[in-house]
Image (cartoon, rainbow, N blue to C red; front, side):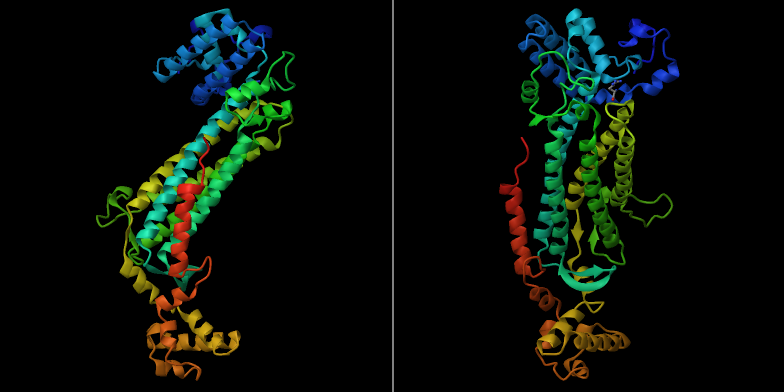
Amino acid sequence: MNSNNSQQNNKKTWSGRFTEPVSELVERYTASVPFDYRLAEYDIQGSLAHAKMLSIQGIISNSDQVAIEQGLTQIRDEIRNNEFTWQLALEDVHLNIEKRLTHLIGDAGKRLHTARSRNDQVATDIRLFLRASIDRILSLIKDLQYALLNLAEKHIDTVMPGFTHLQVAQPVLFSHHLMAYFAMLKRDTERLLDCRKRVNLLPLGAAALAGTSYPIDRHLVAKLLDFEGICENSLDAVSDRDFAIEFCASAALIMTHLSRLSEELILWMNPRFGFIELADRFCTGSSIMPQKKNPDVPELVRGKTGRVNGHLIALLTLMKGQPLAYNKDNQEDKEPLFDTVDTLIDTLRIYAEMLSGVTVHHNTMRQSALRGHATATDLADYLVKKDIPFRDAHEIVAKTVQFAEQKGCDLSDLPIHELQQFSDRIEADVLTVLTLEGSIKSRNHIGGTAPEQVMAALQKARQWLENEYIQPR
Ligand code: ARG
């Protein structure tokens, strides 16, 4: 970034009425180019569409439009090839590009800003940026869903203890557990698709706040930029950033879901659980304790969730006190938004890869489900089917569990004659009820953990991913 104020005669584009230049501190404080330069591609895209419309409407000449198109194409190449000199004194991405354009093509460059303001220009840039980001994120969520689905299909027979309060509750299929995250990600996708509809509207034409006196064609610009429609109130178009807030809320939820899964991976990888192993490439060692293998990646996902949640609050706070219409406050929308997008993209990418490298310890999971009296509810349900009221059955099983605890074994290890001490309704058929497989198989309805249901759920998920879910564009 070039911060030399005097170079290239950098009189501010807007400084006509000013009698003194801004101080170096004010210049640095108010500039956004150190971070908004990354909107350049979208800024150029927006300008190309605007210029085309201006010329079709007879607002600028055809030759001016041709010159603008050539100039902007050259600038785009310069930026892509890292040959463009960004200048802090030119404040933001918009003025940097406009100044260069004028330098290249003269007066035609100065005509580009006819019927436009930086206010509707920047709102357009962010929407284009966010639309592209959403599309990228949607495809990465899909990759992650495939990774979950593949892992679930591979371990369709693996039984694990299901937890409530992080205490053993009831046995479940590991695949069923994984598919809970698939369901969360499916809702995340739906949320993003919905948010995308509101992002995908054109603010250009709103100009500074009130619209413009030139005979513009907003629908044409919308069409050229592939927007689904236009923002219908000019003051709203330039001032609100609710679409970015909505996106950040969806992003915070995705991160929150991944943070929960991370917490589980961390626990499962602890040798006291020993359920899974993460591939070495997602872990690190300790500089002092040679035995250590730490789950850094899931820990960082958990940590970075805090930062994304923070960006959501930052944007909400940014908006809450702003009177209509545009205020410079809105320049502060970019860094939280960019960081949210970057963090989310990296997290999703790393997660899909990490899940494909998970080793599952089938037997350890199973053994763990055999401790903690995971089939106690099944025994109670068995008694209810033999006509004992549920509350009484609950009490009987609680006593039985207490007995097993004293004996130092699992409920399912008790021989039939010992079980019968607690109720005369208990017969030999109880033994299948108390097995992990018996328990799991009995939960045979939509949403239950019975193998038949989980298989159907896996099939349905694959069908959705492969055939039903249509990615935008
Ligand atoms: N850099 C500004 C932003 O990000 C562009 C819009 C400036 N508009 C203005 N009236 N100063 O919001």
